[in-house]
Length: 234
Length: 314
Image (cartoon, rainbow over all chains, first blue to last red; front, side):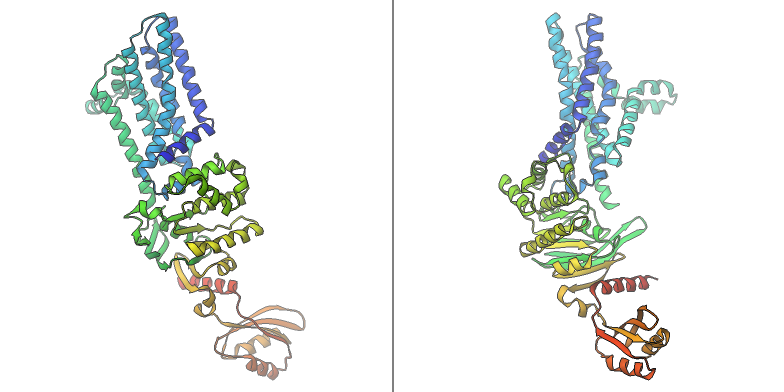
């Protein structure tokens, strides 16, 4: 697993992807930080986090689009799959690689918190709680997008589908309001990422929310190993 | 060392390989020969565990790849048709990554050095793989397969796209590997295989059509004897007369000018038709200018076998 992880990290930094993603994340979070905190004279990061929810939906597919699609296209997956590493180790290595880049992105919020401290007394508990929320949200999205990447040989398709799914997740509230069938809205309510993410931004650390994101992450990592396994047999 | 039993692989409706069985002994170099699309790569992909077969088993040194994948895969070094290279890495970084991935338990720096020296990459450790030529990329792929000194080395068309000098080097390398390792390598060039391998398996249409030791290939494949013949006279008349000789299997006109026609004549291995040919030509008063016996070349034999297999399909 550590070999795959190291390879992923070197892959991210050898290509422009890591820099582009981190730069985009810093740019947007910085812009939101300026508008939501300085312009509004507000000593909390809740709005910044709220806005970043949507940006995350677009950034993560870019981060993960290559993970399996490119391996398959370049046939480098032959090296991975004929090595003694198990499928889950391979998937986990790739997941942790993407998660590390994402964690670097998120670490910027700590800087914003420190900047705020210079002017006011921000509630650190809320900031840290939200930070955990956006981290868990990212982990779940990374898992979903790695799964999407394992389904195709084209990283463009992986990125576009990933962004499409991200938009659906982000706009779930609108869908829920416009669908009149009760049982469908009930299910959608249950899988609405925003519902679980919101609590973190209020500073509420609830076990339900944490478990939700961890389960989504686990589920899609598992599904990815199934896709790889199935490919051997088809 | 390697035991392959009744492998069958289907891609949807298409059957890529059908009921393939063979064994390879320790230290043997096995050549896998067949035209493109015959099922060579599929078989190799199954042996190395990249894909799974629909039926049949592969056992390597007593362990089965589906039951003990970790243990079994550690025994195999594989160079697929397209070397699986991460082109954004340097040669050395890539080999170190593969070293870790394969969980080799040898001193890392020394072992990577040794493998790089073996394939002639010592001076290129710091170059990015994407900047290497095709031949050097192939060498990196080769090096990767050698990492960890695996008992079994599987090479899928290792010489394709290399220049003659490199081909000779790679062949030498394969030969030297055969002393310590069990090697399976595939090619669609027969001369290459007959030169390097102890044993040859010819595969066509997903089936094994021949399996023989390299030095007894002629006998094992039931090869016929061949005669080259130049005769003066009417070509049609000559060939019909030649065909009348009972031991003659095939008469083929190679070329003819106004006076002299050249033929090749295949006849049964146990017979000697030279006298009958002489008599036959004397009867129709056509002088034999040249008669030379020469066995069927390996290439011809290979093509004939494939023709035969094609015929069997129809």
